[in-house]
Image (cartoon, rainbow, N blue to C red):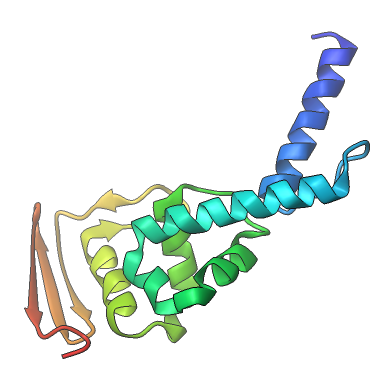
Length: 149
């Protein structure tokens, strides 16, 4: 790789870090344009996480995008499922109703340590708001009432 190519690759890497993971602003770029692009990327991530975690997003109402974007600004994406899961875990104490149930059901169905990709559980029994869930293979059975009723 030539010196020019290596320099260009390093500048591109720094730009991507600045736009997606809260990295420092690289020299030679329009800071306002980079911040605007980074904000757009954060809003897109919020929308993708909302599709993967609809009850979580709904529980935040109109503040979802701002809350998620503020949380995600310093974190590189790990995909919408994991981004939403990590956000939900970090805010677990604030979750109620369907959002708490959505997280509890995910944690019953999947094994996820916050680092490695989630793996389906073969068997699990967990409390969920309003009842319990049992997972056997691909079957999921929820006992009890929903969190609202």
